[in-house]
Amino acid sequence: MSAPMTRGVIYIHSAPAALCPHLEWAIGSVLGTPVKMEWTEQHVAPGFCRAEIEWVGTQGTGALLTSEMHGWQHLRFEITEDPSPGADGSRWSVTPDLGIFHATVDCAGNVMVSEERIRWAYEKGDGNPSVFYQEMSIALGEPWDEELEPFRHAGEDAPVRWLNQVV
Image 1: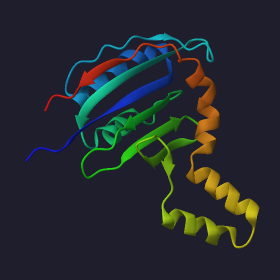
Image 2: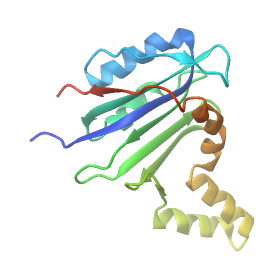
Image 3: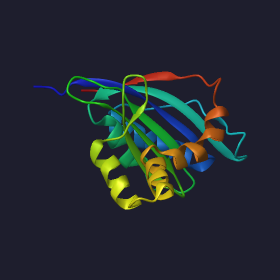
Image 4: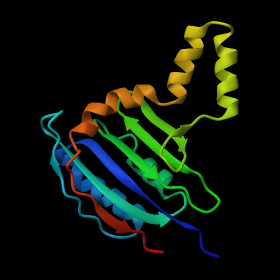
């Protein structure tokens, strides 16, 4: 029995130019097909490049892509995986300073915060609203959004190509 298929997008917001061919190879190794991306200058970070590419693959491909790309210096990226039968959607945001943020997302792309995470924030706050607010900000990925937002705007007119995972 084959795993259900899904799709998503890889947004590489900033990568050193020397890293670009290595990223193509890493993405291609996860998807099982060679990848050639259209790199453009990242105006927010001179000397860095940006690219976007859509993918189709089995459930969990977004997590595999994130694991493959995480840890490379100076790399900022986001990966989305759409909901599919039996699985919620996901978004991974990665920055050099903050590391990985993962969120479950609904069909409109809204971050969904679990009951357990909200309870933990209440407990950590222990009646202090500012601590609760800070924990909820982290649960929603706000620090990652703040860092990535300038890079996102720099790619508003970028072309996007589709990639299919070989199964």
